[in-house]
Amino acid sequence: MSTAILPTPELLFFADLRVSVATPQEVGATVHGRRRLIPITGGEAVGEGWRARVLPGGADFQLIVNGTLAELDARYVLETDGGDLIYVQNTAVRSGPPELMARLARGEVVPPEQIYFRCFPRFETAAPSLAWISERLFVGTGARHPDSVQMRFFELK
Image (cartoon, rainbow, N blue to C red; front, side, top):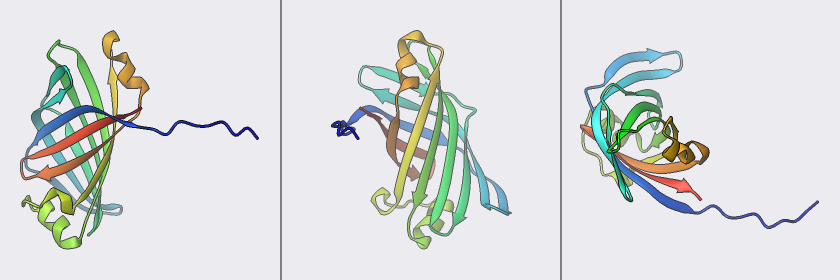
């Protein structure tokens, strides 16, 4: 067996996002957990040397697994200042003490450092100059606010 030295991944800043959201649509308790759909109404992304707006029409499909865990699957489109479109699918895990998770679900303010919110965004684009983002892995962290979600994405270098 070869003992090649494998590189340790590094985090390289990619973008800060603020995604505006509307009132959750409560589907209710299903066989898998409590389902919610959170409409995405806008927002912005800012990276080093680039900006984009979050187009309205996306949504965050949530599964509240139990009192301490929510699984998130947000899908939306960014439009860069240059007019290029980027499809985003961001899967995430949000967990914390039951009382804090219940406050978040009610739309109340909870200090972000008290909630574990980690994500795995993936990107697709038809723009040749941005094709590289479809060929990399990204991770991020986030915070839920009453009317928005704040995130910071990093490329795994």
